Image (cartoon, rainbow, N blue to C red; front, side, top):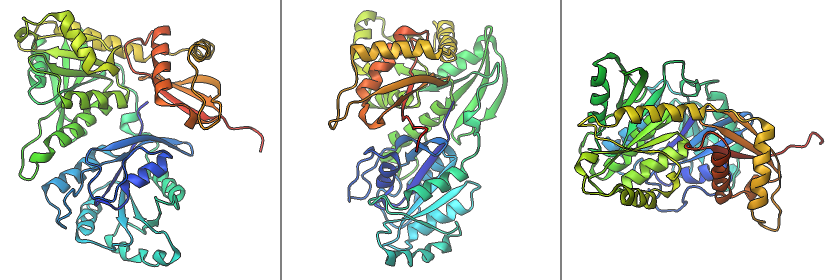
Length: 441
C-alpha cells in the first residue's frame, strides 16, 4: 500500500521543521533560526488516529526571502501541489501577513487542492487575537499551533486527516497488466535511450499518457511477452535563478516517479563514478521502500573494467542496497534488456508475498535472541508479536511496549533477517513499531 502524502510549505523560519518534528514525535529535520536550513525535503511516516501518511517538509521555498514569487519559489509550490494529497501552509503569527505569504496563498487558492492553513508560534493567548489577519488569504480560518511547545498540533493533524482522500490513486494496487516501472537516474544516465530501446524492441506503443506529475510521461510498453507502464522522468529545464537548485528539483521529480512505481530501474552510468546524485536517488528509493533493479548502463563503454572489482566498488558506495540485484546493460546496443525486465517483474512478484503470523513471529523470536534491541533510557524494549499488514512492499508491524526504544540499526537487522528467511530476499521491507494498547483502561 502506498501512503497519502501531506506536504508542508511556507516561508523560511516559520517553523516547518519544528512542526514536522512535533508531529513525528522525534527530531527528523534540523531546526535552526537561520532561514533556509532545510534545503532538501525531509519526510517522515506519521500515524494519527486511524490514518497513516507521509509528512514532507518540502524545503527549498524562498531560500532567499526577497518577498517575491520568483521562478524557484513558484516551482517549489507546483511540486508540492503535484506530489501532495493535502498541503499544509504554515505562516508565522508574529510576522503577520507578508508579501511572499500572499503570493503563495494566491497560488494555493487557485488550485483544487485541500489546504490546511496553520499559524505557527502562537505561544500565548494574546497572539490568538492576531489570527484574523490571515483570513484574507481566502483559505479558511487559520488553526493556531506552537510547534516548539507542541500546542495545537493534535487538532491540526485532525484537520489534515479529515482532508485526506479515503484512498488515493497512489494507494490503489496495480491492476493486472498495469505493472508500473519507473526509470530514474541522474541526467545523461541513459533513461531516454533505454525507454526508446524498450519501446522499439517490438515497435509497439499502445499510447502515451500524461503522467500525474507535471514533468513525467507514462508510456505503455510491450516488450516480448511483458506488458508494463514505464514512468519516464523528464529532464529539468535550466530556467533563470534555478542553477543552484537543479539537483534539488531533479530529486523531487525522481521522487514522484519512485512513489508511483511498483518497481524502480535505477540507471547508473558505468563510465562515471557513482555520484552524490546517484546516492540521493538510491536513498529516495529506499525511503519509499520500492523494489529496485540497479541498472549499470553503458557497460559497452566500460569493457576495461573488471566486473567483480566494479561490484565491490559499487557495494562500497551504496551499502544499503547490498541485497538488490545488479544488471549490466547497454541501452544503446540493446544488450541484456530482457534480463533487466525479467528481474524487475521477479521483484514485483517478491513484493506480493504474504507470510503467516506464526512463521513471522518465529523469525522475530530468533532474531531477537541473536541480537535484541538495546536497553535505552533504563527501559527494556519488549516485542509482543508481529504481523504482516500489507504487500508491495511487504509491510510488517511489530507491537511493542515503547516504539521509541527500537532504533534504526535494529530495524535494518530485522529487515535482513526477513529477507534471509522469506522469499522477498531482494527487496526492501517496510517495518513499523507500534505501541500495544491494553484492552483495559
